[in-house]
Image 1 (cartoon, helix red, strand yellow):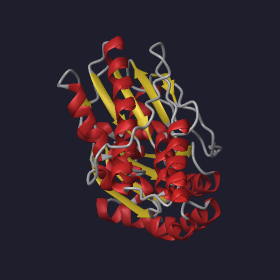
Image 2 (tube, rainbow, N blue to C red):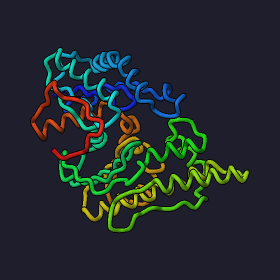
Image 3 (cartoon, rainbow, N blue to C red):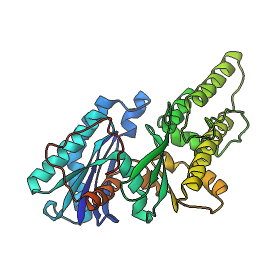
Image 4 (cartoon, rainbow, N blue to C red):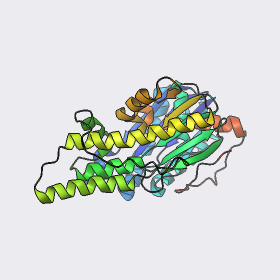
Length: 334
């Protein structure tokens, strides 16, 4: 089965062609990072306009690189939420137009499920498993008994981990996107600043990063007021050590309690080198830990094509052309 994946939930316009939920024939990604740098973050209206400008070209390039025609596609899979509503609408409408023109079935895919299924491209998901979903907007621990069986056992009570990285980076004067820059500088510094590890007790798998973020911001602000020098590399290292320690500790604890066969790390923050190193350090080969290659960690259409394939295999249902974007879509079992 040839699946055309379409992703436009934030600031990447992406179209991919995937065969049988595994083989990526093309995965074209047009990023808007340079566009949004001037604003220090993604501006929703600007993002949606650039999707409109680029989406047709990305469709054409994806088909050309895959060596297929529109008529060869068996299924169109498109992200319909969660995300920025304007950005989502561009991708959904483009995908519906393609499906209408070529008379192809269409299926709406949850963006978060897409990130989880990015792992299926280079690994084989084994059930039951625990998925740690970490991104700019989400921090969740998810127990999966089987394909598209999601049970959220823990989530952030305030800020997502990726959001915290970006806000801490901004106060330290680092250019957008801040997360990768904090990760890079962390490897050049030492964990010398004492920052609070927020575990929220031993009886739950929830997370909280707002207090940590505020602590770093206040530490930096107070030092500036007193005319004291802040070692940015050491502060990055301390912040990252604190975040990764809590993420990995809770994930491993959940994996033990739920007796899983595999741990999956998903979402944009899964590209974080420090998080990978912490899993290696703390896991000690107890569980198989799957993390996608960097090209599949961030938003891309290949993961949507793969998720769409497995979603169809589970449900044997398509959507119709009334499919619409849902900016606040929840991750639910099928």
